[in-house]
Image 1 (tube, rainbow over the protein chains, first blue to last red):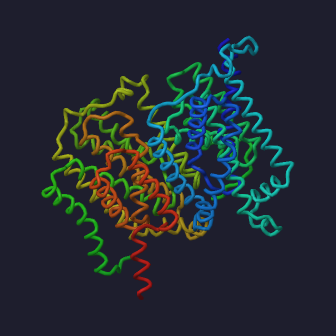
Image 2 (cartoon, each protein chain N blue to C red; image 1 turned 180 degrees about the vertical axis):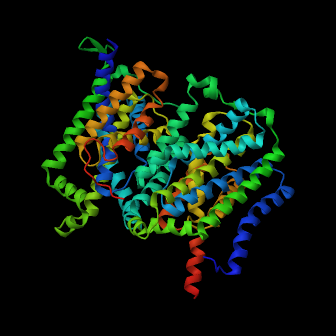
Image 3 (cartoon, rainbow over the protein chains, first blue to last red; image 1 turned 135 degrees about the vertical axis):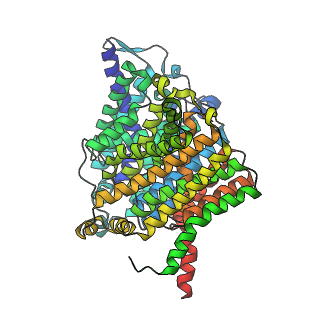
Length: 292
Length: 310
């Protein structure tokens, strides 16, 4: 029953990968900026969880709540300090790409200086050492928790975007920033809040990267950014629903490769990204937001 | 185009000839040949990136993929085809060209999509080359040994020629009709198409030139260091350096990337930053500052002052 395990694991990992990509999608959707430091925020989230667990014995689930305020703050500061200036430049999309690439290098370097080049991790026994049984397949508790947090984040973001005033303003900017401004929405304020939420989601994903991806190292950021980008490209930009779908497709593809062709599991995510981009650049759920 | 002022022709010729001559001369005064060679490799990479990014606006984060393809193209040619090393180096350039041709559908994407897709392509190539299942062909993760053809003097001369070729490519792109059409496409693809420019063809040519330069650079670098692992020639920081050097000097110009590579790589070695992360930190800060305060590069300061003076 190898395929059944791959199927269940694929869906659980898919939910997690959706979480890992959610922040990147949100920031791109609202600001048309690609936060290339996204993976590095995930990495920092991982280190935060390890430090709090090792030093103070804080459960990773509580760390989820603890990382939210600093993430919002970092997002605010980053947006007003860097984002606003880039948004007013000649070519915001490319310039932000290059700039956040620089930010990513800075974060990675500081992480090496601060934490050393070693791998940091938490034992997955923190969520129970006995595997849970789903349809006869043993699944580690940490996987279930991670997938559960991913699902919760998806639902909360959906509620925020579609059932709150701020969310409505956010969607207004997503579809047309100029018209949103004309009806009294302040794009800078909404963008700063969105950036904060995006950073927070990445940090939360970082906490569970310890169980889903393996121990965190300072240099893992770039790879994680590409993975997250693959997920949102598969799903299409804009809606959290697309990210959910993209995550599931990605998770399943990854798990089936790991089960049946483990040597190629490093190659597979990038190959999937390339194929999807070439076959369907707008993604599975994507509206046509690109033009030549 | 025919009635080009003679002065411009002379200055163009000087821009092609002087940089390699300078590097060649420098080898008599400065005995760290590998450092000079690496600097030349980066000049070629920065200029190659300039051709695609500076003139079409397409930024390939995965530029290192062509560099790695060139290094492995050369190594495989030596091991399996038993050709003379110079032919193997040229085949390294061809390897870069072939990979680029294979990846040319990526040019359908724009902006961030293209940048990240190219990064994914480079990573995929790395995982392909270093895959243990391909040990019989590429020696997988265990690296390549080219000691049998090692010749540091000849590799150095090849790098000098490479700098000349890179400068020639950029001068040509800058001055030719072809370069004009690239800039027209960058400004407005639709108008350029309506004015009779073949947009896809022009972009593809720039892409292939750019990739071939990186392939040759990788080939010569592989020849010079002779023993390497796949992660050394597919290291993302090679892309980073090329981008930073080109941006720092000013993309879309002939001298900018040359200046950027010499100044930044020179300063790096002069300070002798021993910890790679300190270097990474400085470069990261530099990228952010360039984007925020000097988006058109170092040369733009001079141009601005000249314009103000008039």
